[in-house]
Length: 233
Image 1 (tube, one colour):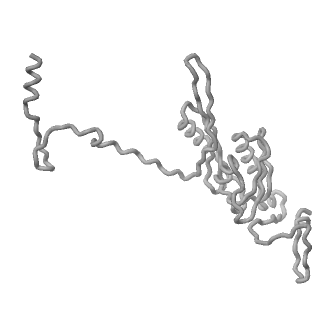
Image 2 (tube, helix red, strand yellow):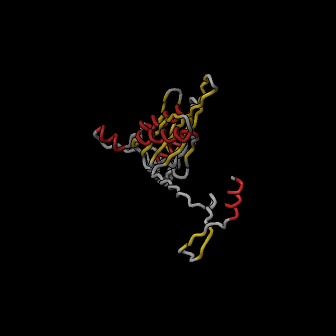
Image 3 (cartoon, helix red, strand yellow):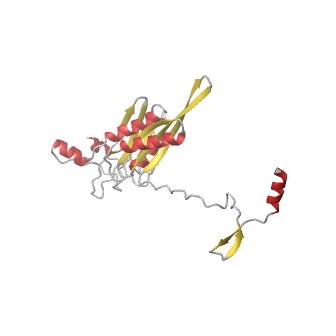
């Protein structure tokens, strides 16, 4: 009985339907999966901030069924115009940890005082075991830094600077020490307002090259050159 019904169904011609677009009858065959219309994937909006993942740490916990992994992402976010912040997000998956770290970094963004594309004076930042030394540089020097220090300096908008990490190599400590060093920056205008008198700072934009203490100073032309020792006085 079942076999006869199956043979009768196979012997029948396939059902036809009329396509008004092609004006021709076509067989009612379902299209393959690859030919079906897929839902458009929403395009990710380009962020107006500079975002950089400094480090992703994996932590494992031994449980009864095996090992359970979790991830922590250190993210630095800045607008490259004097504002920067960092965040440390934790989650069971890497994308979620990066998303949490980015949200924390955007909330922690603060404005720091810069001098053009460098810093107004040298600073020494400390945080936990991290120690970072930052020094202004002339145009064309570039960012002499690496790791977490470079990520913070690029995000804040500095293009010419010298740096040295002299403490712990922990990424979170280095980033925190760099941020702490940027918090110490003060321009000549800020110091003038505090003291109530005009204070002039040494501009790193100037192309005047100061002679070293060992080189003799030639005053035959009558021009006066300021030595580094006079500036410190």
